[in-house]
Image 1: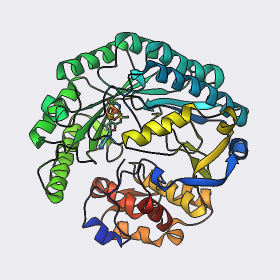
Image 2: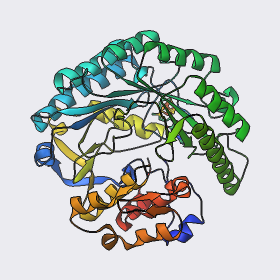
Image 3: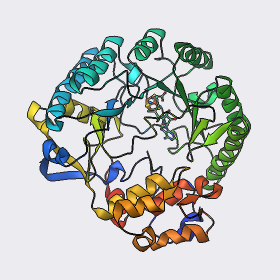
Length: 446
Ligand SMILES: C[S@@+](CC[C@H](N)C(=O)[O-])C[C@H]1O[C@@H](n2cnc3c(N)ncnc32)[C@H](O)[C@@H]1O
Ligand code: SF4
């Protein structure tokens, strides 16, 4: 997702600027990845890793449409043959990866995109077979999450997902106000959206997640709250409230400052509404229904180390190495990279050629970012145990969080305050290392 990264400054000047600087869903961001020379063999990359509870992520880069705000690695294709070749390539890649990993156990599995349910049903079935038969995932025993869009959440596909053990269905809706989504180039009828949600509820997924976006063209706080009310009608176990990060082509007709104010207003009102309706805030974007049984949510945990990514846009994480294919956002760049993926000769899947090697400092920053930006906060003794050093000796600048009322500290942990959670996208960007910041700023987007 987009970053509006500013130059390194002290936290105080950071906080006085836009609250929307970088969505830190992982660290380092993919735009900090670069070619790795010489390539590292997969077997070497995974040799020292604990492989007893890995996360498998399969990426499906296809969608029914390209929404004007979306900068994920995905494409619209009507070429069935191409989709078939993509699924065959997933099969080939999975065999090589499994050989390199050796014995491995998976504790979580997610299929994301793009829109996985855009695949024809027989291909969707093959994707589960790859996970089960090639990768050895015990589908009925672990949490599985799948992303979908309203139009592609058909009864037959939902039934298939349930029968293969999927317990979390995550649907991108963005807004229940038709004119708001249409203004972003997303064709979506609210009647169809409601019908899709009804089908999902009837299919019996233990966890349903709804994604909504604020800061859309034409959206006001009133229409935003209307959308949340409609979502609440379906009592989803989770709701994600995303601030819009990319100005859609249709524009918004307001200055950056006005847009920031609209997004902040939507955040405050949306958050209050969800808290009043029995939801708890897990992070700036994620809200969970309090009665929801605490099963580990695959999406939410996906930044943990030990992630094996399969597919063209998937990332993989070991403790010391993050890697993926090259990345693009523009249509041509994406199509070229996808072409390259399906033409990859067998033995090339055995090597890591593009990624980021994490030294001790980057591993610590990653650990801090991924814990601090959630409700649990940064557990100080866990940090001490893991890295054999004190967090404030490593990063004295973290004390600024306390003096600016962005975090509080008790004996156990450093936790963001209500204001700190609201400013997560600023705190995250501020804490990036100089090296990551420089790589992100010099990245040339294709
Ligand atoms: C992989 S997509 C979800 C599934 C599905 N493709 C769909 O859109 O219906 C993940 C979510 O990221 C959010 N998202 C994507 N691009 C965004 C942007 N530029 N700003 C804010 N949120 C965004 C949307 O809420 C989207 O549902
Ligand atoms: S928001 Fe979802 S449906 Fe739209 S282009 Fe992005 S991944 Fe595809």
